[in-house]
Amino acid sequence: MKKIKVANPVVDIDGDEMTRIIWAWIKERLILPYLDITLEYYDLGMEHRDKTEDQVTIDAA
Image (cartoon, rainbow, N blue to C red; front, side):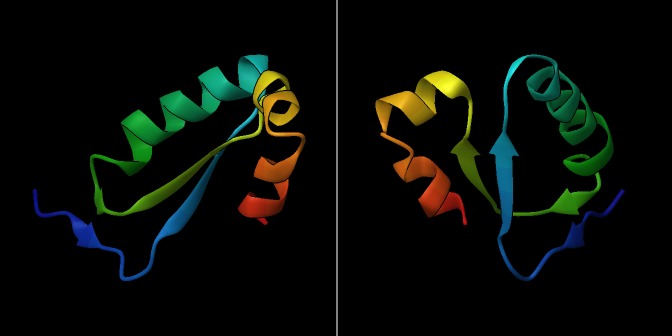
């Protein structure tokens, strides 16, 4: 099957705990098999926000 080309990058934001697991499942099964897409990844989990002093939150916005 030919993938649909997405012209612009899409922000991929990870959260904490179950949201991380659920989003990974959705992405792997429902998005990536069908779209030729560039994802800009941001980890907004608590540990990473603490490490970056919330700079990652500003960058993701």
